Image 1: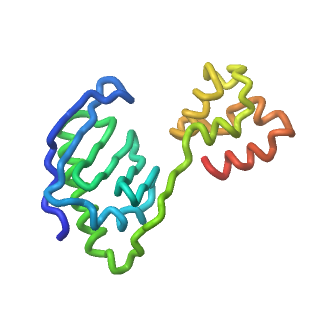
Image 2: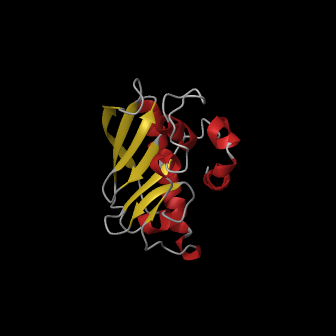
Amino acid sequence: MYLDEIQLTRTLPCLAEPGKVQIIGTPSRSLEEVIPYLATLPGIVAYNPERLSLTFRRRPGFLTLLMDKVVITQVKDNEEGAELLHSLVEAINTTWDQREELMAVTRPSRMLRPLDIYALLPQTNCGECGEATCMAFAAKLFMRERAADECPPLSADPGFEDRRTALDAIT
């Protein structure tokens, strides 16, 4: 077993979603050795091996691991936060137990960002999709709340075929 617990040490209002909280936990041991193995798991948004920071997407929100801290956004309350931290301890310990079968990640990685999606949109801000701007639509695509074919200019204009194909591949 790698980790005994992650103690809930702080709760803050969640800026991303009013009414929810951000949970901050402190692991009973540094996560330094296990983070490179956790970086092999799916759902990675960003990994920086120099700073040993790892961020996962969770529905909703994000989970970020640092050597001495864990931050989880868009949590309902402290009770849910404590459950998430307990589940995280189990996931960390399982990953550590299976580390012989994994190859630790040593290179930085970054997942798709809303700006990456925005760059592929027509950027007309026409509002035909129902969103105020193409950036708002890109954010909804990023969160998988909308589909690329819901952008009328992107769907109708044959000149955007390459962009449609790229968006379909990455979203």
